[in-house]
Amino acid sequence: MTKSASTLNHIAADADVSPSTVSKVLNGRSGVAPETRERVERALRSHGYSPPGERRLQPFVELVFERVESAFATEIIRGVQRAAASRGMSVVLTESGDRHTPGPEWLDGVVQRRPSGVVLVFSNLPADSKKGLALRGIPFVVLDPAGDPAPDVPSVGSANWSGGVLAARHLLELGHRDIAVIGGRHDMMCSRARVAGFRSELEGAAVPLDGALVWGDFHREDGVRLGLELLRREGRPTAIFAGNDLMALGVLEAARMLGLSVPHDVSVVGYDDLEVARWSGPPLTTVRQPLAEMGEQAALLALDARADRPLRAARVDLATSLVVRESTAPPRR
Figure 1: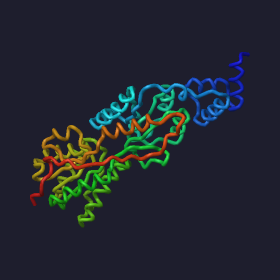
Figure 2 (figure 1 turned 120 degrees about the vertical axis):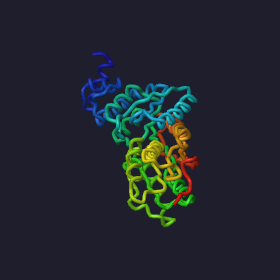
Figure 3 (figure 1 turned 135 degrees about the vertical axis):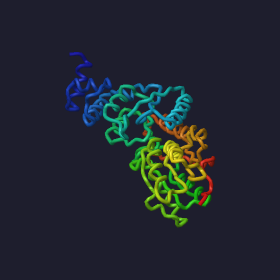
Figure 4 (figure 1 turned 60 degrees about the vertical axis):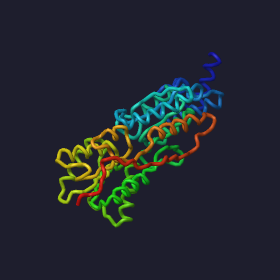
């Protein structure tokens, strides 16, 4: 028996697993339960080995979206690329597939790819995935987290509550009192925060929202469908705040379908300030969140971490601002 085989057998005995399981962990292969992998890695360290992710992190940032298909994603990619380039690195994109939480197959893939940092967009990272990344020295940051991140999860977002306040204040100052809201996904923290800020400002002006709040899914089709629903109501609203620009563009289309003029019959405010917002008809008033800067900050936060220095918990919220264009005006009635 060779010395290396003997050592492998000792590690397997210490971890109470088979030598083949130790070999899988050493080579970063999948098919090992998280608890078992952690036990093997403790035994490896005690024998002077380092898990594969700690030996050689590769010079790229892995950026994880549910789906890469919108101008929203493009802005974030631009920021992450800027940060990666400043460190002489590239960016790899992966998709989690219409879910907030990447599955175990994604974690297995990350172990194989060994990126220098991971940025997850709209994500909830389960405890076993967090532990798996930490054990391999792969730092991660969640960008615009879907839920309220745990204290040990670093994240980057924007001041969503304040953005909602800005949108409501603008419409109130124009004289609107019959106002409706199309919120984004109700299960996402950013959606609820925008609506909460908007509602708070209305309540301060004694303007009830009542039944004029509906929830969508951040898609243009939701803006069309829900915009038609709101604009067909008796005593239709004079203004609509949409939880993102894509839904706001859908509201513009709904108004056009009903023969209504924006902003003369209804004012529309979006959220994000995507590039397409300035080219819509009319150009869209919107709340700007600095998506590219958010991506850049998230990537830099991940890349600044090191395997021998635990990633510090952090929450970074960048400021939002109101961009007034031609889709809002005082109400005619």
